[in-house]
Image (cartoon, rainbow, N blue to C red; front, side, top):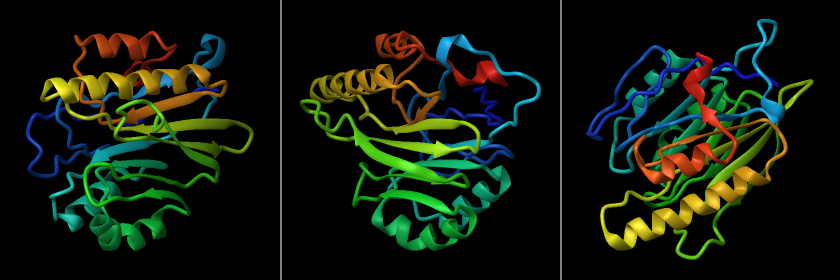
Length: 219
């Protein structure tokens, strides 16, 4: 299967307000990276339908709910991945998002751990991955989507920010769990979210070595 990610992922070091784009809005600490896996190295063909994906870290202390919805409407994604999706965020925009997306996996939380996947495509299966890793702290959220004649796995990931030795150790544990989950997949896969890593970090290489490549290669 070929997936064309019609999205522009914005990188920022400041998470205080929404960054707007006609394709995507993302609030992250270091690097937001979509990773794409195709079995047997298949390439996208011109005849395949493009899928628009948006990933956004809404920042759990942020209260600009209307701005978030406006950004989502501008992007008009088929699939929306949200990080730091708190119970308050869910209460403020959840009903509106359900008007835009028929299928939802909600793992809202009171703090940084909250995740959600919204999709216009049916979600046939979903589960948390990586939560059994020692010190994992935050699970990744996995969903299997039915695109009609094809199926697609989407993983929403948000490892901790490595701001201390303890958190750096925790992040490595989380990323190892994510790599294990990625390596176990047999279906085409997109992994996106707020990874809290840079391109030069060893963790970045470990993700690419799991059989995926940066999604902007498809743009």
